[in-house]
Length: 157
Image (cartoon, rainbow, N blue to C red; front, side, top):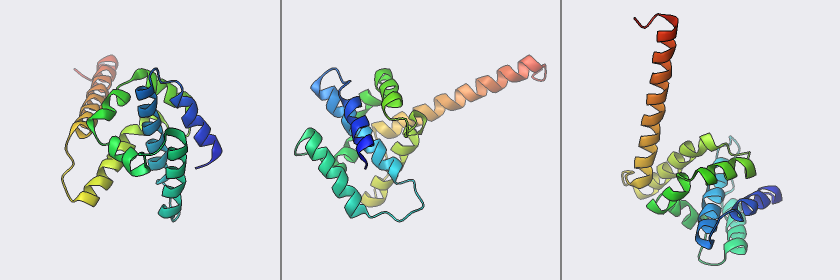
C-alpha cells in the first residue's frame, strides 16, 4: 500500500458528511483496495500486506479496526448504505481511479467467496442479495438494449 493510495483513501474519507459515514467510506475504500490488490499473478506476502494495512487503518481511524474487521464489515448489512450511495460511488471513482467502480460487485463477491472458504458456510445475507439484485438489473438492461437493437434493425419482428 503506497502513499498515494493512502492519500486517496483519506481524501475520500474526508468527503463523508458525518463521522460514521466517513468511517464507513474509509472501510469500504480500504477494503476495495485490499481486494483489488489480490488480483495479481505474483506471490503475495499476506503477513506483510496485512501488517501494512493494519498499520494504516490504526493510524487513520484508531484501535479496534483491522483489515479483517474491514472485510467483515464489507460482508454485512451495514455496508449497504455505502454501496447504494451515489455520492460514495462518484467520490470513489474520482478519488480512487485505480479501482474502477464497476469492479466493486466482483470484489465484493471475492470477499464473500473468501469468507465462505474460511467458514465453510454458504454465502447468504444482505450483501449477497444486493449482488444478486445488481446482476438481475444488469441482465434486464442488457435484454432491453438487445430488444431495442433488434426492433430498430427490423429483425425483432
